[in-house]
Length: 394
Image (cartoon, rainbow, N blue to C red):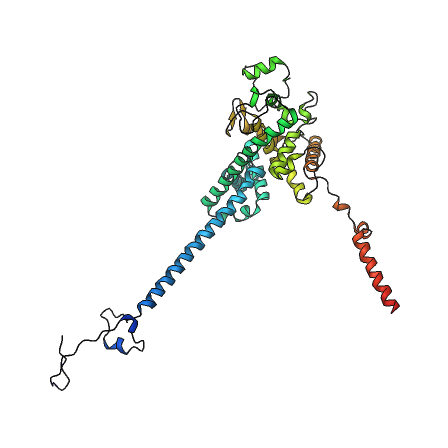
């Protein structure tokens, strides 16, 4: 205990020092000012301090959630957009190569000299900018490494998804159309390729007759006389799986398998149940442009060829067959035309694909004069006349 001396120096009784709990603090400041803390901190309620700490932690947690959610949404957006690269733009070129080629041409302008491969890259970038215009416009503002990484992962994932789904679908289509014995197993690729008589026929180069035993044996034994490479068009790309050696463009890229595969990838698997006749015209205005993209055509042919092969996982080279060069050959057929005659034939082929996949649209023929005689306007006119007659009678 301590003694307190009065101001008049008279003795006084011992006094107990006073203390207060945090919850008993007088917020008028009287007690706080009487005995200030050496740290200069004024006493506060423990409950109030706890509530403030909890509120601060909740704010911090909410901020972290928002940052995480924003990053996740951004990643999801890149992934969704990136899937279009392998499906609509290029199957093999990296996004970095496309951007670098466009930058090179922009910096050097007309003085730049380009190889065939660089020309393909630039055409790929032009298609990329058309399919994903927001990337081209905001390329400098993006997180370069993160955005390109997400786009690349998504584009490669799309290719993996498509080859995986076609592996089963192509088996079902071949079984349905050719009735092989035994049937091709949807999840087994080892029984496909040239060891399978039907798959072998579809994979066989158009210039050879698969029905000849010498051709079958030569291809299966991989002799030097029968090298299967990307330099030959396989029969699977021809209408009815037959080609005219005197006119190799007849029926080229019009096979039923290709139509089914295109529908499965770019519309929906359920739409791929039928390849005969024209499409049903759904979303014709937008999809008409999609069907005309050359890169989509090339992707379908490449993926179907892979699905018929015995290779179990995606690779660029299968024996003597280079898929990347095969892809380039198809793209070049559409884009590297020697003159106006072949250009018209290519346009006609693309129109065939548009009609086959999406049907035919005649909306441009719906002139105001034609529409005025249709039932919607006719009913409106009848109702108006009914009201006019009632008004006149009154």
